[in-house]
Image (cartoon, rainbow, N blue to C red; front, side, top):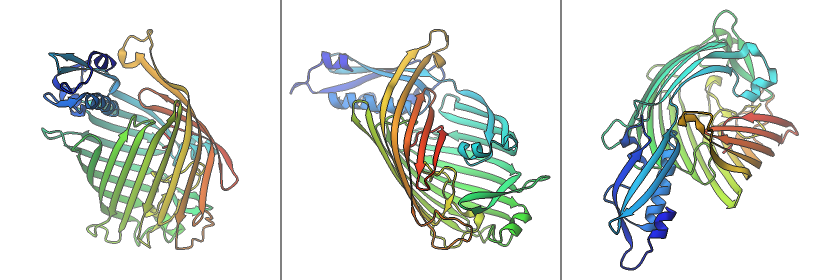
Length: 454
């Protein structure tokens, strides 16, 4: 791009470029049309120079955020006075991952670390085939044994029509749990363990359609079927655990909208992200008692401040207007996606959750790329990494109009967590966070996480 700017100076009589050809290289597996879909310039487009350079930058961002390539380079080459050819060079990732499962049965790693109970560990294999058939499709098969048994299959096809706007995903599976939480005590989950059988069985299947008319926003509509079976003992331990029965079948309809304008989705430093989600559980078709509506809204913004300094903040809310919900349908702070740093070990349930997250970070080592010559394949030898120090402040409020007799003391009050963190970022969307945090309860904890904080 700098070469093009040096060769070409704008004038009143010569202000536009025509995109003549787009040449793609490096895509040994990925189809050309998948790459061309993300490029915001088409053959025959007439654009000003600043538009050309901006669209090239955004096109590279689009391709990187599809998680198909380790590197993307787009170079313009001028010819015939005002015509430009685009040379798109990509380095493909490794797409087939038979990932061993060695996980914990708790809500997050930090909850499991409190007990360090290795009997609560799951094992198996998670077979992920990304970019299946070279069409950015995802095929996923999970076979899990150990403490919790799981079988899940999913196939996502991002584009099913010629204009590459409509997509489809089909998934289904079953989960069998020996242990199920049945009540809260002091804002922590209390579990019932079924030694000889399973305390919960969950069967599900879903059909999801997606609509992506442009580059940055996606609409999706999902219809799913859920069947849950709980041990009768759970209803005896907590009379409010479920409705009148221990088995439920119900439909869920969910609409989701995402507007993603981030520079690098796994660890953004610039841009913004917005999401809205509406969900209705139960339509009176199978189990007539199941009826829950929920609304989730989020807005994140990432702002470069000066040189190596960055600022980010997030606002999110979750609203569930139903006054009565049995225990197994309740949620709140501590369940994805609602969480703040400092309260990873707690659950705070309520009808309305509002939360705020923020951090200021400094790039100790800005993202750097290097080639590892001792690795022969370019799928792994083009390595990049970055290291960031950050200071953060998170806050949340969980409203629950119905008093609980479970010792929960975190409802209906402002909660906050603040502290210091260190983030390591690398290729294949790897993010590792280490944080030391203080909260309103005058507690301090050290936490490890594996996704970006905002």
